[in-house]
Image 1 (tube, rainbow, N blue to C red):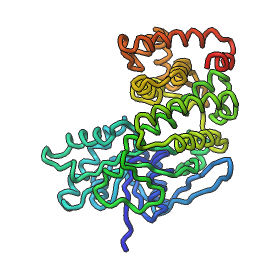
Image 2: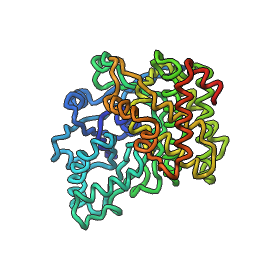
Image 3: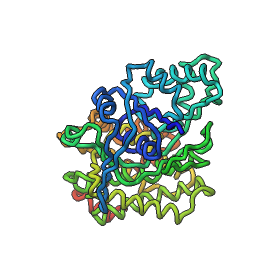
Image 4: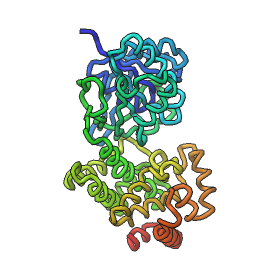
Length: 410
């Protein structure tokens, strides 16, 4: 039987350690498309690479076979590959999508001309809101006006829960293709979006109500990560790793309470999708994953990019807005958001994330400016919350020792 093929746009950490890993180990050939010539050349030279699984229980190496690569500028070869692929996946980040989608559209149009009865499913491994709607609209701009985007393309949203740390330069220099990752290997994706039968790939977890599961990632996983990073930095700026935060009992309990408060809102929003015992188990599982020493996930990686992570539709503001709407308590969530305002963690070279320097300058205008202009709260409708944020900021700044703030105020 002919081997099935996945064309994977993006040979970065998620592309290699997660999407390609699942498909390759289930028997697919994987063809990567990427702008990094070194990675593409190595893929075509070796046709395999290693995923280093790191956890407190074990370290093991997965060999990912049957892989190759196409340089992003080779659009003709990319188009031919899209024509012959069984499924596609995109994991490049929202900024790079604007460059990838015209190339993808070219291949889709060619495929449709040759195989009009062979729709293409495209996994959107992007961790972005309304990814399918956004990609459909952009692709339509590059395809003929009468192209049947809604019937020919399965645009499959995902919830990416796999944690992949920033790799040290010495590890990259040792092997450009190796990638570190945690053992977690479940890809939650939109069951309703497939145009073809769902691939028989171990690790795929199709869900009917995809929006609920995307929100679960934001409200619990992403929120918990942010709470740990921001509180951990204020507690001890010398901490480097997330596990250091989570091995501190006071911080672990704070993060747990914050995640539970958000989970209460999530359950109220989707009463038919989640039950409380399952959500509590998910929180405890995440806490153990955050404690993964072997993974070496840094506070810097988890907390950086403040304009995005403190933004209106992201991991802290969205649960706060939903909690207020449902008349649920949001005091722990608001505290996590305020802690983010004071996040100043640098990378291994002592440098801030570039946009975070801009955020720090913006924060000089005060808490109200950030709440309204960065977080997107309404100055009139959310005036009470903004006042609470101002008061909380004054308290944070009044305590010499952050642990005293946590013990006395939360």
